[in-house]
Length: 312
Image (tube, rainbow, N blue to C red):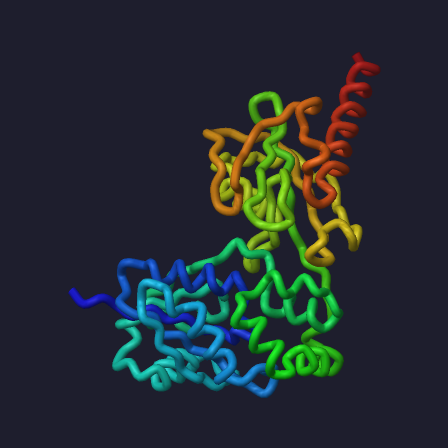
């Protein structure tokens, strides 16, 4: 049986470490023999198709499958988009393709036309976020991209091009990000994970809100992915929106609390997982504002207990 070809579609403006992770995962898929990468182009691209192709060639050259690159002009016509792509990538039929995507809109365009596999990376930054960082003089952008991206930005007047575009384009106005965090009681303590990715340290399970699901569903999903536990929500502790609470971006989080069941196992972007009683909590090693969130939770519990004692 002949293997299918993998297909990835994206702007890749700019190529970052999340792209590296995604491309690696696709190249390791056993059901494909090569990966077709459709680099979309339109008037809003800051970097040319050739520049983005060079970025991708460098990050894919050591991967296990060969990569082919195509320039695919954007068209705003979902019903014919899949056929538009097929003609450009020169495959006889889309049933020879497995589309790898994390974009529901792209998946909708190809629904019923080829096999679709959703793929995501736990990397917290998007190309848009990295462009925002450059446009607002946040030097941390350099640690979030491979060397080839830094080289192209540095040697092709890239920083000025980004800043010029940043000031003109409505797409790059800074917007807050939505996340969900989880206080999950389990075996007489609260579950914390040790983060694999920066910012390092211990943290409550949680993550950026995904498209197409509710915040409750996102919290349950994140709990399962990071700890292996089933999360039964009992309520909302609160909304935390200090612009400085996350060093990466202005992130607003909704904190759910409840009970966990099952077998605890660190997974996804969790390096480790553990259960901590109040006096065991690694307060000085907690990321973000999670020390405040955990203290607020215990304060809430104490208030409830005190009220119950008064009524007894």
